[in-house]
Image (cartoon, rainbow, N blue to C red; front, top):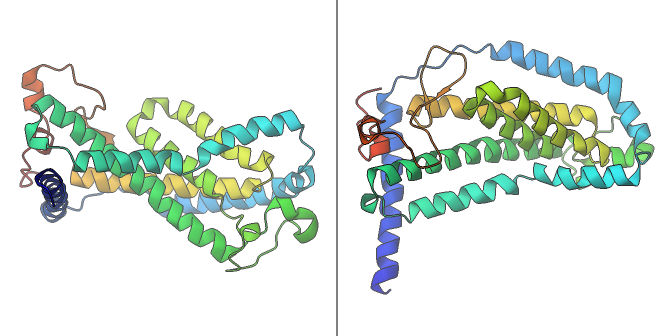
Length: 286
């Protein structure tokens, strides 16, 4: 192996080990303090909403399949593609690869902070979108609900557990799960604009109904699943001090030092940022 690839390999391995060391130390040193969220109440509300949508809308959606105008179907088919997890997972993975190959010690303090924030953001996307994607695929193939494309043959509630057939992978919707996770991330990062994020992500999730791939209850169930994974990921990140800080509020609060662009703050303010963000991990302070 020549000198340049060997040096790159050593840098990559060193960065990976440093990152894992920081995560492990922070899990040990920082207290396991999480806000008290009434998960059971939210779970019951989510299940009741899903059941209500199933009873009120699913049969009508099955009967309406194929009745939408071709132009509207093409319109929704274009936007439904943005529910694919690859749009979010691939850039996040590439960002992590680039950060892993970066010589952090050669960066300025300001540049190091930007790379650090992008690395944390990519990890958050991978956790929220990636883990919820794994969960929804286990659920949908385990439940085996027939898609509305086969409404005439199987009806609104036909279950074929573990058939491993795409025809019977309707509940929950994978695209809607991705949109729920994206909404959760935007909710945590931009809580004052939650209604904009909800409108956009919910509209994209709803396109799965109009293209005939899912029933309304499939999308509601998936959206809630993705949102839950995003919130849990944010809580874990807040404990570790990545992106969010621990506070008395119900949801993690974004740190002032978290910016995905170059900071315009004075040098003194950057120097006072989170120790890890300036290149030193002093995990003794929670």
